[in-house]
Image (cartoon, rainbow, N blue to C red; front, side):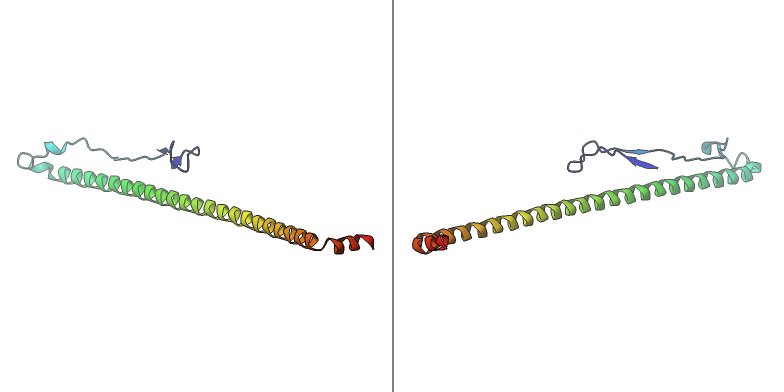
Length: 138
């Protein structure tokens, strides 16, 4: 199981840690024979034992390499997932910022339109004060 620290600074990655647990590699059954002790010339009657030893060691090496390959694949998958997640978060933040900017722009345009209406109304009122006074008389 691969675990990562949830308290990670997403921008800089400080505090990022990856821990591995529940990974077991076994090279059982272990042979009591040492590879350097194999001597077919002096012990021709032990050839079957030597062959069995080499088959066991070969199987252990293959199993160990398979386990390392599986762990490497898991690490690659986690790395790719983290990269995609980071990219998705960056895109989401960009969309939020764009939405906030659009909202601010819309508010600004509405305020500018209101200001122009007020200026137009004041210009009309200043150009014909008698017409405005007559409106209030009726």
